[in-house]
Every structure is written in C-alpha cells, then in structure tokens.
Amino acid sequence: MPLLKLLSWVITVPLLLTGVAHATVIDLDSGPGLSTSLGPLTVAITPYPEWQANHPTNPGDASDHSAVWISFADTGYNGSVFQPYQGTTPVVAVLDTFVTDPGNLKLNVWADDTADVLLDGNFLMHAAFTQNTCSGQPIGCEPQDAGSIVTPISAGTHTLEFLMYQVGTGTNTSTNPFGLLFTGTAPADPPASAPEPASGLLSGAALCCAVWIGRRLKSRQPHPTAPLCA
View: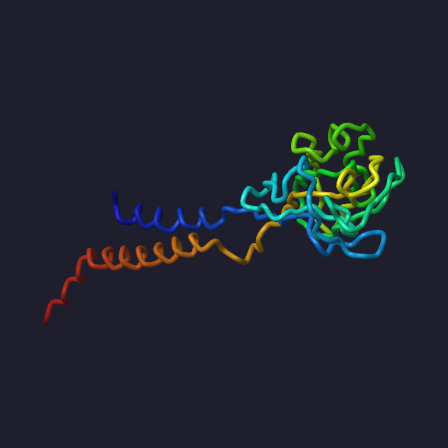
C-alpha cells in the first residue's frame, strides 16, 4: 500500500472510533434511606420465604444486584412492626428522585401485597387487588409476579413513586408481612469531553505512526541537484 494511503487510514480510523458513544446507566434500587410519605426513611427488612429473594438481577444492568426488600419500618417477615389490613387505601408512598438523560426507564417491581408505580405523578403500572400469595399477579411478591416496566423518559429530574398496599388479613408479621422491592435503570450518557481510554490509546498510536510514515516519505524525496560551479 502506498505510504500516503496508509497514512490517511492510520489517521482516519482512530478518529472514527473516538466518536463512538458508549452509554452508561443510573441504577435505581430499593434500599435503606429512601424518602417516604410517612416521614421515616426506608429500612431493609427480612423477606418472607416465598417472596422474590433479595438481590435480583437489574433488568437494565446485569452487573447490579444491590436491591433489597424495604419498608417504612421493620414490617418484614418476623419483623417488629405489624402493618394491618388497609385494603385499597395506600399505606405509604416510597419516593426515589434522580436525574437522567433521555432514553428508556427499565424497572422490575415486587410488593407485598401490591403497589402502584408512578413517574412524576403519572401511573406506569397499577396495583392488583387479588389475593393468593400476595396478589398472585403483577405487581405481587413472588418471583413470577414482577411488574416489568419499560417506558421512554426525558432528560431532567424525575421522581418514582411506589404506593404500597396491605390487603392481607393475617394478624402478625409471620403470616402477613409487608414490603417493597424494585430494581432498574435510567439512561446516563458519559460527558462528551471524556474520551474512552481505548480511543485515547488508538489516537496516540496513530500519531506515532503518522510521524514514522512522514519520516519515511521525507527520506524518499530526491536530493536537490547541486548547483554547477562557474
């Protein structure tokens, strides 16, 4: 390949690769410290044996398994705070506020007994007021009863709201616990000014190659003819 053509490829290919955007995400997971409508922040609780286990795989980030069951108090399995039946009246709202770029919100939600899910006050999924083990359908508490949500989201600050319901009629936390579990992602692109490390290496290699090829081209140029002496 002629050296000039090789030089053009050495410079062009790394520049093209440098422009490839690699999107990142914000992980949204239930855990201690989230705001609630009752005042106290959320706490981690012990899941009932038939509930979806703690640490489910995040639907938008397979490396994330940090979500755990939560409530406004220790209302989980064998917990110290019993939440009695309230039917179709919400017991508590759990709030998660975050800042995102445009893209898709992905979310899996479980609750005992069930829950509404809202984004900025708009319903994404409604509670299911049936009774089996929890609701027996999405949104419920067993692994197969996850409420799965994928919806477009705009850039800016947003708030997820989970309205939790207690429909069970048991009289203690051993037979009638109460809680929420969710995991998901929102889009977050990296800053345009921060190139990928691999792209930086490619650009550096291209510069070295360009210098070497330039020297080769210079060495191939014929020497000017010496002037004739009078």
